Image (cartoon, rainbow, N blue to C red; front, side, top):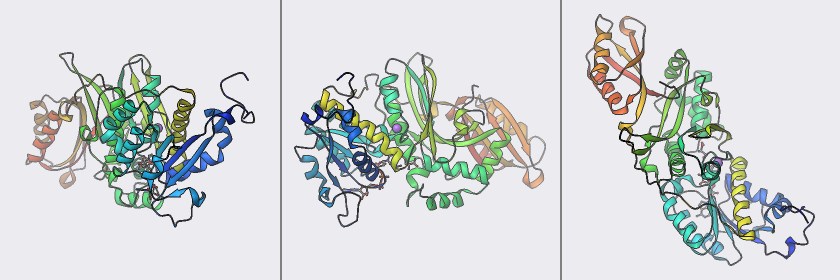
Length: 447
Ligand SMILES: NC(=O)c1ccc[n+]([C@@H]2O[C@H](COP(=O)([O-])OP(=O)(O)OC[C@H]3O[C@@H](n4cnc5c(N)ncnc54)[C@H](O)[C@@H]3O)[C@@H](O)[C@H]2O)c1
Ligand SMILES: N[C@@H](CCO)C(=O)O
Ligand code: NA
């Protein structure tokens, strides 16, 4: 036989190889698809791995529910399943911190490789889990945890391992992108669009993690850790959700040739003294309609990576959903299985740079501020004065309406976020400003 991948029908050699045993924990949206693909694609997987891939068991909560897998493979005892000698790879798809954390640790410590899509867990405990994997010389893979099917973890960890990543910015939450796209397209308000997202199955029963930016922040922590070889956890990520974005904000954004997206931004901050820090932040921001992320609509995700030598790279596709996420899980599972058959290991966690976190106050941002003001001479000068005092330069001012409905919209140039938020606080205290109705950042511009 020539070549490293055998023909699926040429099984004489691989039959002699010990099968790779897989335990799947959780059979929900993603787990059910993973089980389906392993079952349907058994011949191809065997040829690609170099050994048969066999499901040893699937841990579920409710044994009585009908499932598309033999009842004999189901168990409600995940700990006993992963302890089996014939399990080589544990695929964790139950989500949440407990008991997933302990089960994954135990699996790694007993020499099993682990594949997980659990971003909430990884954003807190990658350090602990990666150490356990390194100690036991096994693999810990998690491509599905960020942007579902879209390859972003592996490109950052492997393809760009020789480059210097400056920035990773993207739309990594499908639910919120669907909501903002719908609001933009239909003019509907936030509450109605959220309800629609629930009806279509995008938003969860409790949509807090999505709409308040926790999910996007967990993904930002994972991306920033890898991109900047530093440990970044969810608590290090500045987070603002989309629940205060209004239909009027989207209409106003259009007047500036912009749209609004919930962005996860991971940036290498280069300070004037030559030192470096990491900024990881999530917030809804205006971006120009000409920016590549502006065209990412519906439940789609996209990630733009900027690296010193590679330049700008963009990754786009389905960031959520059972089969797209299962595709990424399967990719990881095949890698882990190949390593068990042929030897070798995936890359270890790399945190050698240990860059400190730059608080949001220090990060240079641009602001878009919309306010209702008294319609009388001198107000514009007074408002502008608050920006001048704090060395924040104004890029554009637009006045709309008149009388009781007089509104000012100010867009600033780049300045430390603290100076920008101090300007907003000062505007809120001004007699001439009736109400600061909207404050958003502006991203994706060069100035
Ligand atoms: N659905 C997506 O689009 C998507 C995308 C990327 C990552 N993820 C991640 O993948 C994981 C799974 O997501 P999902 O959408 O399939 O969730 P889900 O809620 O549909 O499935 C989880 C399943 O695990 C089961 N489970 C939970 N605790 C268990 C336990 N102790 N023992 C046995 N079974 C248990 C639940 O009963 C449920 O059926 C999560 O970590 C999620 O964040 C999901
Ligand atoms: N709730 C997440 C699932 C994918 O991680 C989303 O809407 O993107
Ligand atoms: Na991915």
